[in-house]
Length: 231
Image (cartoon, rainbow, N blue to C red; front, side, top):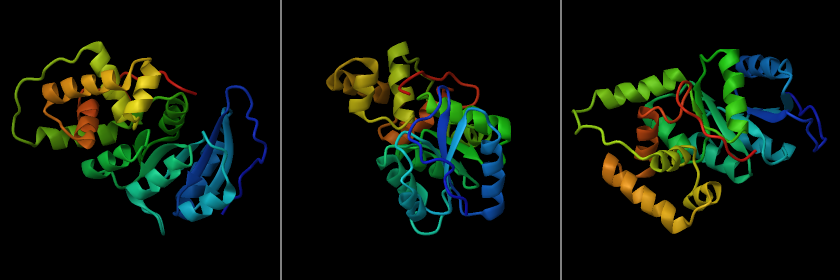
C-alpha cells in the first residue's frame, strides 16, 4: 500500500488534492500511476479501506476516488463517512446498477464512474468534481436511462425552468437544501419551494428519484451541462 506523497497542507495553484480508497491491488496501482503522471494532481493517501484512510488524515476538501466493494465500511455507508470528513467523493466502481449509483449519490457522492473508464475521462471527472461540479460517466448514465426506458411509458415530459434545473442539478450533486440556498444566494424556504415544484412536475418525491431525473435530463454526466461552484 502506498503512503500519501506529501504532508504539506499547501497545494500549488491549479493543483487538486486526490486520494484513493481501492482494495484491488492491480487497479489501485494503475490508478495511482495515472494520478502520479497528471500535472494538476497532488497525490495523497492511497489505501485499501476507509479505516486506513482515517489514519492518514487526508486534508479536507480533497477529491477521493472511492470503490464501493471495500472491506469493512462499504457501499453508500463508505460514501457517507468520507463525505462527512469534508471530502468530495468520486465513486469508481464495478457496481454500476441504477440503484447502486443513486444510493451513492444520495449519500453525497459528487460523481460516479464505472471501472472501465479510460484515464482521460477519469482526469476530466476529477477536475469537474474539484471545481464543484457533478460527473456521471456515459456508461453509467446510459444504464440509468435504459432502466428508465424499460419502465412503462409516463406522461409527456414537463419542462423545468432554468432555476429549477439549477436546483435539481445541485440535488443530484449531493447538496443539502441549506447548501443549495448558500450556493444560489436564496433562502432555504425558497429552495424547498422550487423542490416542491420540481416534484410536482416530475412525479419524483424522493431524492434518489430526483437524482435519476437529473441524469435522464442530461443535467449531470459526461456530456450534459455542468455547474460551477465552490472550490
